[in-house]
Amino acid sequence: MALKNINPSGTAAWHNLREHFEEMQYASMQEMFAADKGRAEKFHIRWNDFLVDYSKNIITEETVKLLLSLAEETGLKQAMEGYFGGEAINRTENRAVLHTALRAPANADIKVDGQNVMPEVFSVKNKIKQFCDEVISGSRRGYTDKPFTDVVNIGIGGSDLGPNMVVEALKFYKNHLNVRFISNVDGDHVMESLKGLDPETTLFVVASKTFTTQETLSNAETVRAWFLQSAKQEDVARHFVAVSTNIGKVTEFGIAEDNIFPMWDWVGGRFSLWSAVGLSIALAVGFDNFDKLLKGAHDMDEHFRTAPFDKNIPVVLALLSIWYNNFFGAESEALIPYTQYLQKLAPYLQQGIMESNGKSVGRDGYPVNYQTGTIIWGEPGTNSQHAFFQLIHQGTKLIPTDFIGFVQPLHSNKGHHDKLMSNFFAQTEALLNGKTEAQVKAEFEKQGITGKKADYLLPFKVFRGNKPTNTLLIKKLTPGTLGSLIALYEHKIFVQGVIWNIFSYDQWGVELGKQLANSILDEINSGTVKEHDSSTAFLLKNFLDN
Ligand code: F6P
Image (cartoon, rainbow, N blue to C red; front, side, top):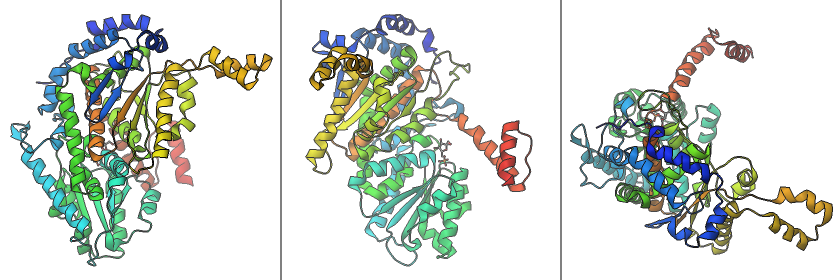
């Protein structure tokens, strides 16, 4: 059964939400909090180690009711069955979307084309475990019989961002292996990344689902040439492994079949960190921690699959995002983790969210008549407070923001953690309440600012507040809670794609640039500029003339 084709803007719920918005656009959260002391009690979800408080949103119980009916009317329940059940919901590529199978238990029965995929999933997991145990313990060694000290992941997009983000996020749990990432085809990036590495003790993981990606293949070739300056051709087998669906291309590159970790076309690149693409994660933190990451994601899968929609974290967060995107006209969302460990979460989710839901054609093949994918951006707090928070507090744009914080720090540095978390709570409170004229005047009085100066400064110091935020307060950053957090956002992407009636799991929009880059590279190599618009031709000629 395919995903239904329902234009959300034609549903009764959408119509009702439009009408409801007419009054809600002027609603004041401050007033709603003042009128209802139990508001936080009403609008929060507690699940495992997560507390999600969504009371600081411009919503009433009626808003939530209408949003939930939008989910019902657009067939979310049935779509979820197709998603978890291995149906080819990625219609334009005729593929299932089953990253959830990668974290399901061994006894699960998840079928693709009538075949249970779990035995294969576990056979690759066992291969990952054995390989990582050997590298970490030092029983698998380099060509001069020295244990490995460094791992370099060569990949881009989903074959880089996920592992890169998780290795950074789980730094606290890391072993002795140093893990680096080479992604950009920028040769300067490659050469900088190789600096200080010893070829005798470095292991290279070439991760590419398709094994046709220009950046990854060029980088892998450059790295192999660098390796061969010290080692022999036959040593490549000890130092290079690959993760791919394209076994033929990998062997053509020179990597032995035994050194290939397979993956499947039902795993989308941007959802692949749970597959062997996560090899660098398992190497960095050990297989047990990698498995805990998968288990945490599976727990979130179960929550998403079984919790009623009004108590379902991914569903509620997705609906709130639709409320602002489609009714308030918000264009972007910010994501602010209050831990430096999650500094790569926003770039990682940029691919997940924007490559998935940056679509303008509906599932009926016609252009949509409403907004889809949100722009996502962010940086850890408190750094971001000193960078772009001014715009969120007093700018002209509405930017719904997710605040992610942890009750416990990882290093027992309570003094710092309390300061960090006081900022975390203070920001959402400030965004909610702002600062009234009366408050500013009272401050002026205390500071002795009076007369013309006070009158002049007053408007600049007033904050309107009423800025929506979600607060995700999580017990501790562990492999398990990280897995749950990532899976939460994956399911939020799914819910929004279903409701927006788009196909979230293809990415045709990135192809044109790749094609043009290939033909422009031929022109650069031959020194002849062919037919282009006048701007591109002018720029190319100038590039070639210098
Ligand atoms: O450029 C888009 C993309 O296809 C992503 O979806 C993918 O994660 C990335 O390129 C890398 O692809 P591959 O893993 O096949 O090298």
